[in-house]
Image (tube, rainbow, N blue to C red; front, top):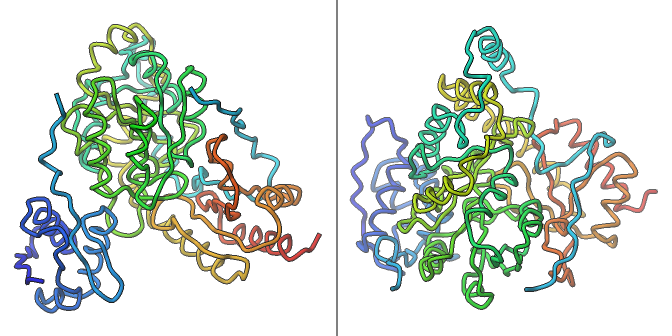
Length: 472
């Protein structure tokens, strides 16, 4: 262990923990801190830098989350091997079962949806003001279809936001707008070769799996470990596309560390027709440390196709998603899809552009992070009091957490009985690719909190408690 000489700038406007994080991150990536080398303890570092220990802990937590450090109980923090970060270079059908469709939620009084968002705190007054100003304008452009990729101003604003917030490197021309992620996947299928083998994690976003299956792709499930998709399985499957959510995997909340990301990029570089689809699910809402950077920002070979949406940051009904294509696919897009009209109305695009351009979107995001953190804390506190909770995880980001249950009922039986009492629950098994075995699985719920208040949480948990306790 050696002392780290970090020159903190108290006047830069950048948080101290971020400066510590960036320094150690660079030292590890440059090889100045060797793989396996022990770092100073948080107590020693805090004393050396004359700052609070919690500041150092925040930086270390972020480095652990991104896979730069590995904590060892009673031993300390040790540097991980990310030596390939700036060095690697590219070298010169199974059966699936039917996947259930989405269920209407209007009939339930309490919904623990992992997709629900808070409606009470949305700045409707700003949204309506912007909408009215657009409606009052005498602008004939709204009567024309516009660019098939989407309006340039909106795409430019999205590109700027993604670079600042997610570390995505792209030009405006690389961004394609569409009404939902599934539509963008349909577009993507027309750019890539047919009969592709798509590898998805065994627990995943089922709507994407449905889209791939409908496009006649072969969807193959890949087992996961604590670091996400196990990349060695991709070669065994002879996969062409890997569909991943590295910054916050849905539904498990796993963060893919740097070493695994590099392995994934290395796999993609080994063949010209291999691509990684990065679904940046729930990237905006992280409650411990700063948001995890995108995989696309690390890509140097144009192998990552990045997909994002405003469904959770604004509202699902907005139906605006975006795809960032590698530059090598742009000619193919113009040839195969350039004649399509965009599926997002011009007025909707203009409204969203103004919401981004005047800073309202980022102010809304910052406010919602605090609100969702409060909701998450409340739900976590309530769940920890229940004897039937075996384990809680995935609570560091997103709009849901996972709760493993200790009960005699099966997961399906609990969800069915809760539904009869007006409570909609979401079981983890609903997000497992169908042909994966559920043998010996622990009953687990996705406890969403985005659209719930404290009263709804308490009432819903009370009903679950009665069901598990045998009250019928």
